[in-house]
Length: 121
Image (cartoon, rainbow, N blue to C red; front, side, top):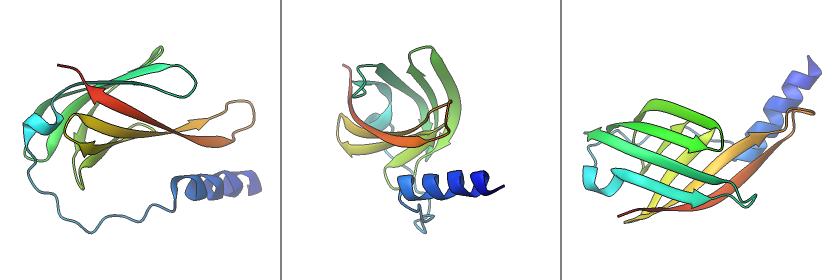
């Protein structure tokens, strides 16, 4: 049981104590988000986010990194959204910051990978 609380505490610290946003959901400009965003983690692994069907503050997202592929409907708030263990944050038009929590399977330790993505034309 202590191990579970240690993992939770570590994740809380790693992600920065994520306080829920009190900002309401508002419609975003689809053109700011739609498209395929690509980047590379510090480990050299490529990743991509494909954002489509942006309607109001909702969107459909496909995330791929290596053999991992995730599909999810997301809610956009504060110029960001989450898919799985990753957070996509729009930095400026055509540029985004990606933060992904990586858990090591052999000891349960976590680290936060930060990378940058650009939208392809």
